[in-house]
Length: 375
Image (tube, rainbow, N blue to C red; front, side, top):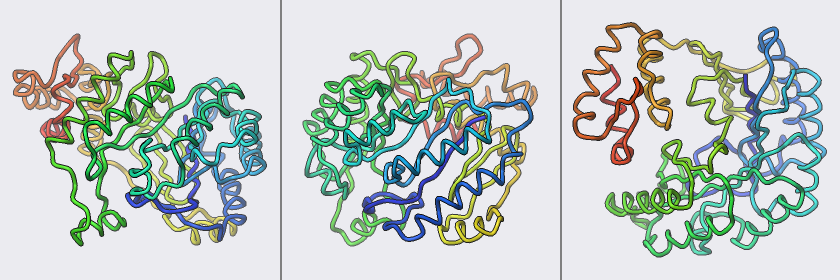
C-alpha cells in the first residue's frame, strides 16, 4: 500500500496547468488541520497487517509547506500508519524553494527523494510558462540537496513548446545530462481546457508546434538518454538502472494506494476508486467537522480490462499474457491477441516470453495501439 498527499497551494499559476491548485495562502492553516484529520479518519482503510511502502507529496507545490508543517505530517503518519521506511518517500519541490536551510530541513525528515518541476532551462521558455524560477536556481537547489545527502532526484521537462527549436530542445537535454540527475519525466506540452495557455491559442496568440516537430523532439530525447545510459521505462519517464520512480510505478502496476487532500484519488487494488472533492473550502470545512467529502466508483470488468491494458503497455514491463488470462479469461485473451496481431506484424508490438511490449517505433503511436487493444 502507498500513500499520496495532495498539497494544493501554488505561489503562482503556470499557464499550462490544469491540476487542482489554489494561489495564495487562504485556508492554509485550516487545510493542514484538515489533512491531519483525514489521516486520522481513514486509518482503518489500511488493511490489518499491511505496511505503507512508498509516500508521495504532490501538488500544487508541497515545498511551500514549512519544515515544521512537514514534521507534523510525517509524525502523524509514523504514529498511525505502519511504514517500512525502506521505500521511496518523495516530495515535489519548486527549485526556488530549495534553499540550503530548506534542504537541511528535508534531510531531517524521512524524505529520500525530491522531484523538481524544472520544465525548461531556457529563460524565455520559463517566462512563457509562467514559471517562477531560473535555471541557476535549479543548479543551486540540486547542489544544496546533494550536500545534505539527498541524491535520488528527478526533474520534469516539457517539450513541444511554441517556437521551440531543435537546438533549444537539445540544449535542455544536454543541461539535464550534465547535472547527472538519475531520473527524468518529460512531457509534451498539452493544451488543457480552461488554462491560460489554451485561451491564448483560442485567441490566435499562440500556435502549437506541428506533429512532425513533436515527433522529432521525442526521438531526440529517447536517443540522447539511451546513449547516456538511461532506461526508457515508461512513455514519459527515463531513469538510470534501478532508479525508476517506485510510487508512480505502483499506479501503472495496480498497487493500492490511499490519497489524501482535495482532489486526491484512492484505489483499493481491486475495483473501487474514491476521490476527494476538488474544492479546498469544502474539503477543509468538512474534514474539520469530522467528515470526508468524497465520491466513489466501482470499475466494471470492461473498465478493469481497459485500465490494465493502458497502464501496463505504457511501461517496459508490458502486458503479461498469463496474468491477463488469469484476470479476464481465455476469450478476452484471444480477443486481445487478435487485435494485437496487425501491430505485431507491423513491428509496433513484440510478444517475447508471453509479454506484449511496445517497440521503439510503437511508442510514437502508443495511444492508437492502446485504443485498439481495448477489447
